[in-house]
Length: 284
Image (cartoon, rainbow, N blue to C red; front, top):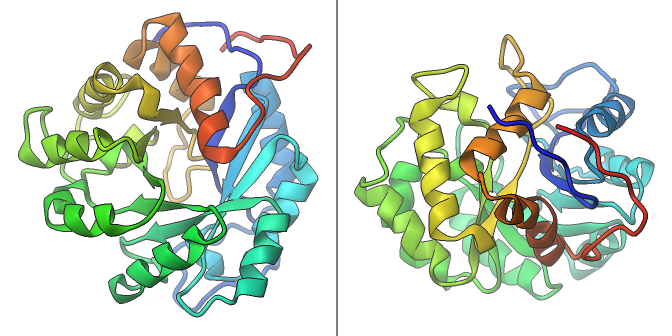
């Protein structure tokens, strides 16, 4: 793992926040009983990051209250949100969420997700009317059969966790090549995050998944984002956040490319200012 300086304005594009006592949907896979905002603020500071994107946990369904409160607590200038909405969401609800700092709709299509496939096209159309992107998590092996559908959605699409190939593939696999073709449209971005969720090799380098991350960076660094996936729900032992950030030094050894992934790319997707003037730079 490679140490590197963290540039001002660096963004963690995938964080989940929970609140003790908040109601969860029936059958929720995970709902920690901790208040997370203060803990994440400490983690962000320790990593030297400036910005964050709060991604609505599946445990709370379409009630985005906890995520909205987290955006406010962490600061609207430096925090954005990705909500979960269904296809019946009203124009007023979308306006209210936008005003609260949300700029995307999460489609978590794996176990525990609350949005079915028969709603996703309508959701993508609805949220595009307010300038939101769609954030998609699925098994990367399903990308070839879903590619035309994904490309039918208006606006920007962000794909989670290096494509989330539940059974890791090699960079020459057809499904990974499909991911590259989606990126080549100019509308699809990928989060470099959570290799531990699917890696069969494991620590320290998660080499099977890291091979895909490096290939993505080589192919289209201008479409890559970085994320911690904090607080690593259901993963024991929890990954070391500093080591997860240092992995980016291996995936993107060029400092200019790395800075683009941490700062410039998220500024484009999430609407941040391009830099934070006067903010210090801390080591990873």
